Image (cartoon, rainbow, N blue to C red; front, side, top):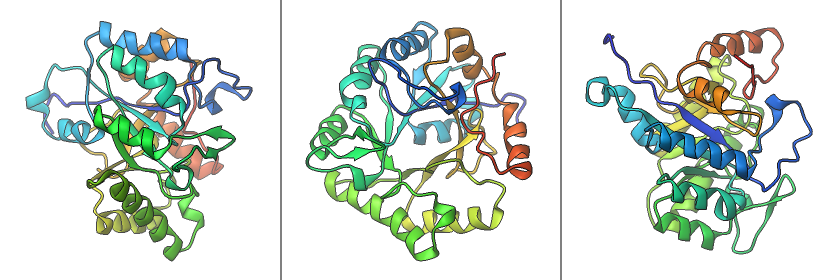
Length: 269
């Protein structure tokens, strides 16, 4: 292993509403209010972070010498909510960033459909965003916990979403995001899913495993950093600079002890 290793923060967002009405504990919150999101994106720009895609993030961690000293960040959104189009992308574009958006294709229609009671993108909006550089990847068809479905359904979820996005955009799709907490301790399932993803033509993917992406990550289940409205700038900076990386050990142990999702924990440092 080289003395210097590239570590890329891959940020995980979901919704960007005008006002965050999250009533759950902070680590379960998946919303980042518009004002907070803009503050975070501005921080990235002012501190010299260069935005990269998920695929570029994987390549960067595999070639440390080439990217030594650069501050890279990948921005991702799960679930394909419409407020990415109305709120998040205008802010990203203003500061010179783009994102990778992972779509659960059953909830993306020619007219707006709802997922978890929130409006999602339409295919017209997806095509418009793709023309200005937004990358789209698969988040399955119906957003199930894939470990709980049978082999045939698993393959349908993985292959069907990819095929639908490719048909709608007229280009290949190679990125995947695992829905819900990633069951990394279930090695048999992980191996089975990895095989299906590889056979289906996926090149890279992300998970809810905590930390910055590094060269030892499986290319289909790279680590990410959850972000929400409760991240003030000191906490946001700590995540970007590695202050959350150690939490993967706690997350991994908790899955053995309780089977409790630990993927959105917000611990103040």
